Image (cartoon, rainbow, N blue to C red; front, side, top):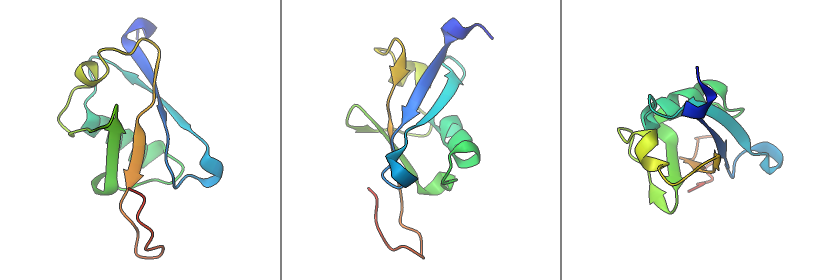
Length: 96
């Protein structure tokens, strides 16, 4: 795939051990926020369930059906959404 049509998302999550950011490269024109959540569920170290994820970018809670190209229209290189997830039964600690 032509890398000019991809974007690197740097995901910040308050639940990730040692506050390490997670990077994810996505095809800009073919991705929705829902597909980003699917990738996060599979690839993020915490494996957050899709229904528990909340992606926030530029102060806005992102809808699953939003297209990445529309959300990231202003971004040229690295975007940094924040991942919040609902508390799990074992921690009881809300993260968003």
